[in-house]
Image 1 (cartoon, rainbow, N blue to C red):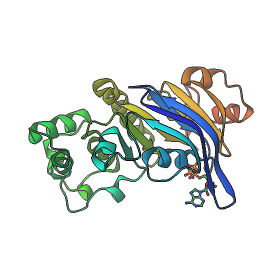
Image 2: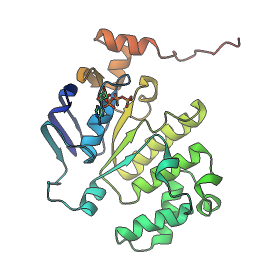
Image 3: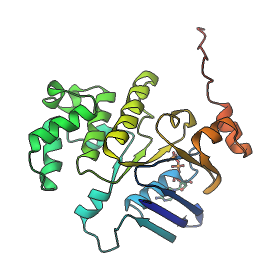
Image 4: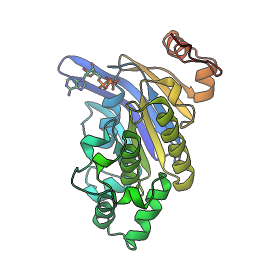
Length: 248
Ligand SMILES: Nc1ncnc2c1ncn2[C@@H]1O[C@H](COP(=O)(O)OP(=O)(O)OP(=O)(O)O)[C@@H](O)[C@H]1O
């Protein structure tokens, strides 16, 4: 297991945001946390990423300890957010953004590695010279994914990473995520409110509702025969294969 979370609890004031949640991600595995807004998904992700402290519970992330430094942590876990524009430096080209991360981690052959990272996310040399504002939303998210993969982390946390993209671009980014996992062996913790996007990227899913897990299991099983009423409602709102949007 690369990640083992046990009995996680987070209280903000008098509000219990996460209430006794346990889950794990195997090495190279992929787990989705699904639930509607306010169910506690992002709080779980932020605690795993070290951006927030748990009120109670334990998190085992590879061989990291409380004393691990920033570099060791960055090599273990990276995070991709919904809006890459906020997290990319607007004055920096794509190539120099990737080069900077590789340099920080003391990597050799940085131009070759930069090219490999761009290939991995389906970008080329033209994109390498571009500034974030010269790229589309989907391309910017590809850059954010390449940058997150640059330190070769064991776990990538994707928090609503495709939520802001058009459906067709969403599908491309989901495919690239599936390919990148195969190519690198990185594990994913994939946070989303949208159950329909987990099928291509995740093996397992937990469904959260009001801070608790209401259902957990392999994605295929949860999508085809959900047990909890809440999951049935979420699954019921997914368009079926063969579903064709009608024109108004
Ligand atoms: N820093 C904070 N201070 C106070 N309350 C918070 C804080 N962060 C989250 N919460 C509350 O905790 C609950 C869970 O929030 P969280 O962001 O984890 O849910 P979520 O399922 O990720 O929803 P969303 O998709 O809207 O981010 C919500 O009721 C939220 O208002």
